[in-house]
Image (spheres, helix red, strand yellow):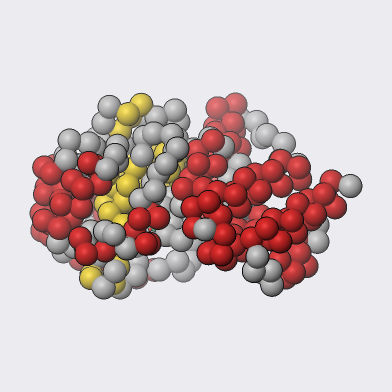
Length: 322
Ligand SMILES: Cc1cc2nc3c(=O)[nH]c(=O)nc-3n(C[C@H](O)[C@H](O)[C@H](O)COP(=O)(O)O)c2cc1C
């Protein structure tokens, strides 16, 4: 699959997740088989450009390309300017967030709220595409509400505006994260546009990925929550799609080594104090299904010091290996 001039090695995408898919997470997920990892959304408001949060979110040091940066906002010119700014900083792809269900993203009506206003969607996409030389991609939900699914119309607007790929989460804005994602709307969109379509929502296993690809005819799959604490899921999905066979589950030493690498990345990006706080949820997700994982999680959340946290993780995995 190609996005603009970027030939991707497969059709597996890491879903952008604010607070989770930061640089350390993306690097590991990419190495574990994902072709592309969209950054956490960055506000288009210029006054937030130099905030610590934005600076950390746009940190791509050492990350393999292509780099896809997601911007959020509702003002066409402001989004166009944000796209230009991030492209100048090195973004290879600009992704626009029209999928986030939060009422307000950074205090403006943005994300999937924009799906209510199709003319505005068109103005935003035209402005952003005109502003940059790099490909522009779009992430949406199926529509504002289950009874008002306008993803096909939005996809057409996107294609006409020059958007080069479209990711669709199979829920409407009103669904938030309730119920299960549906794939009929994604299939319909895929049958009505020529740009690559990436199916997203509730893909948790290699079989899910295969089934959703078959049901939708989509060109790619985007995985978010199921990869939390399980970055090797991308490798497992890629292998299964290629061969029809399952890879053996990773063993504790590999999981431990990946987690330690992740922790080092978090301490390096955020500093040890914040890094250790961010790390807690990743540790919890990683050990969730391992022997004694719950007890270890309860113990490790009480540790504030990064080095003590890392030693505790090392000890836990050493006990598992013994
Ligand atoms: C904690 C969290 C943060 C998210 N942040 C973003 C974001 O910054 N931009 C975006 O487009 N979607 C965001 N999403 C939505 C995901 O990209 C994805 O569409 C959704 O989780 C469904 O996929 P999944 O079932 O594989 O998790 C977020 C989801 C979660 C759970």
